[in-house]
Amino acid sequence: MLNRIIANSLPYFPQNFVWMFSKRYIAGKTIDDGIDISRSLNQQGIWVTVDLLGEFIHSIEEAEANKEAYLQIIDRFNSEMVKGNFSLKPTSFGLLIDKERCYELVYEVVKKAASVHNFVRIDMEDATCTDLEIALFLKLKKEFPMHVGIVLQAYLRRTEADIKFLIENHHTSEAPLNVRLCKGIYVEDKSIAIKDYEGVRANYLKLLKRLFDHQVYTGIATHDYYLVEEALKLINDKGLKSEQYEFQMLYGVTPALRDKIIEMQYNVRLYVPFGKDWFGYCSRRIKENPKMVGDIVKAIFIRK
Ligand code: FDA
Image 1 (cartoon, helix red, strand yellow):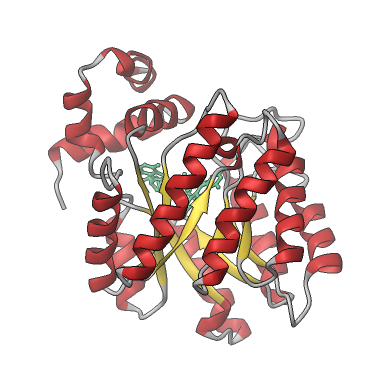
Image 2: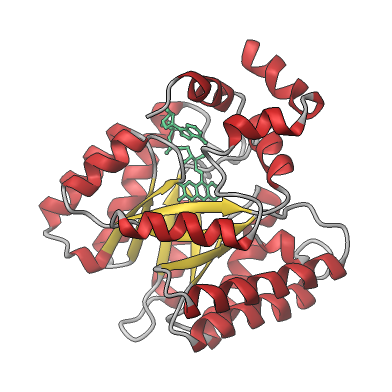
């Protein structure tokens, strides 16, 4: 209840105040900030995937500006030898305004990443985008089989069928699938999404096993201790090689778990968001999941 009140009143707090505790979760406001944080994570043996904050655009011109920004980011990462790839949200490239133009813009980004042997992950947004984002991914994968990946959400009931479809039709040894599996962050209706915590966990493990069984390269994206432990058991039972998976976490979240995984010598990639829209990003994330306020408020007092 208190979390919800704080979440709803966040837009009325001064931005500088909110920044004091958001900066633990956001790399900064500029490309330079994103590069500095990424480089220091690289020095700790951590890979990154960077995301330019810029959801909810209203025009194709804004989508074009986002494309230009990503091209610049890819150039900078490449020339400054930062070890990381790129995540993007198709709605910030105009998915819900003009899906053909969105494809052209994201195509340019993936083409650029491919030209420097890098990789772009298509983030998964709310359920109104699922079909569109899978279709976008498949169209791009045809052009750049090794340079683009998708995210799938374990809370969606449809994901099991999506995985089956993707494995049967779009997963070969020459062009293997690359999937990030997460629980899913949006508020969805119970007709399409599993709502109970244990149910989502169980589905996550079922789907993870399916991906591993078919040698799909998998980003195990979770901060849930139980899921990490179960994933480690699966990895050991199946004798998976380190080239077949990586752990993924959000920048600033559960650093103790992250360090434990690194200590055990598993590959870890952090999702590093940055950009001038950081305030909108924080407010939206917190509104979507008021429980985050508890973590953010704790972060004001506990500095690890
Ligand atoms: P759970 O929510 O149970 O969290 C476990 C613990 O982690 C919590 O108890 C809390 O301590 C901590 N924690 C988790 N999230 C936190 C946060 N945001 N702030 C502070 N503490 C937090 N979703 C989506 O719909 N589309 C996407 O494309 C992506 N992409 C993505 C990339 C990566 C690298 C990660 C790690 C996650 C995503 N997600 C996502 C978000 C994902 O769907 C999910 O909402 C969060 O990861 C939280 O789920 P957990 O599995 O961590 O478990």
